[in-house]
Image (spheres, rainbow, N blue to C red):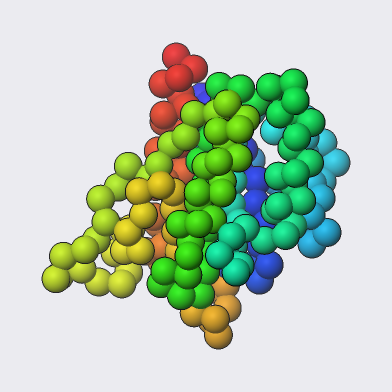
Length: 184
């Protein structure tokens, strides 16, 4: 089985719920970046030992949160020694609007993964974009690059749509399956 780790920052709990769904699908360990942008004790060692790293951040002002950016900048230490080279990477995000420039956040995560000489995995899902599509369908937000969710700005994390969370869960399962193929 692949050793998958989900490292994420969540400002209001929505990205945490996504992270939990991604981790459930991947059989992954969760590492939360705290409100000061730091990892918990042993977090770097856990990431270094992982076969796959799935990164998550809310989309704030068209990119990752500053807490995630602090983590990304601190990852220059494993970058310098290429500790994460050839690991599988993937990413996910959430914002209040349907578009919300979430793709910019996923591009940021992709670029970070490429700088670490990683291998990127997208959703592998077709979008729900027919006339019959409903907001709660899988991949309704329509992303190929990574999992995306949309949560209204006045909705609590407990109000996230099951379709977005199931998209995140299936995305995590895909990352784990692809990682197992690379390990095999």
